[in-house]
Length: 173
Image (cartoon, rainbow, N blue to C red; front, side, top):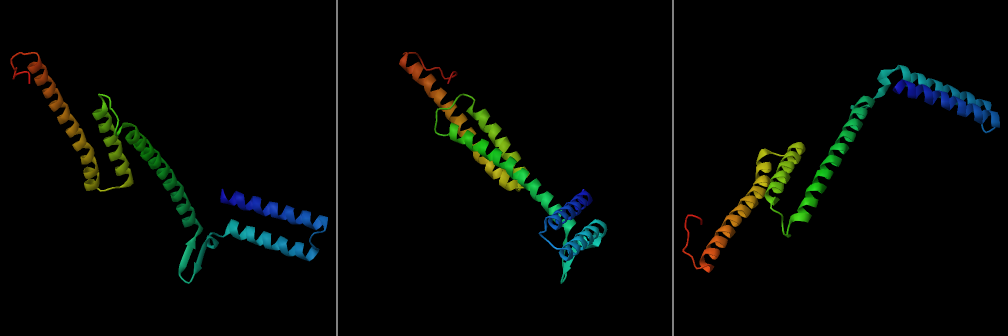
């Protein structure tokens, strides 16, 4: 692919300087010099792989390494985009559920969000300890909610029994 680009660049440059010669923008000496420079540069880039590595006082720069880094940057950008979307989705869940009257399936949604957070942290390469610590916060809140549900239901049963004047049914409680 690179060779095709080099050939196209060389051909286009020769056409451009030929046009400039025909309209009188450059002279014959400049045309000859530019033609030779374009020809030699195109041949050098097309044929010599060792020109793809620059060595300046043991600081080697390889065009192939630069291409690898470029591909890695694009891959990282895609990962960051995906992670950003996940974080945005989790934030949207947080904003819509926290501090509001929640539906009966809130604990299930919290568990799903916890699983997504775990996956997100694993993709980021977080340690298992950090993943467990963050997940434990959600699990503790779910356990707290479930305990409150049990306590509320117990209070409701006791209140109903006491207000109806019946005997207290300990088995039901």
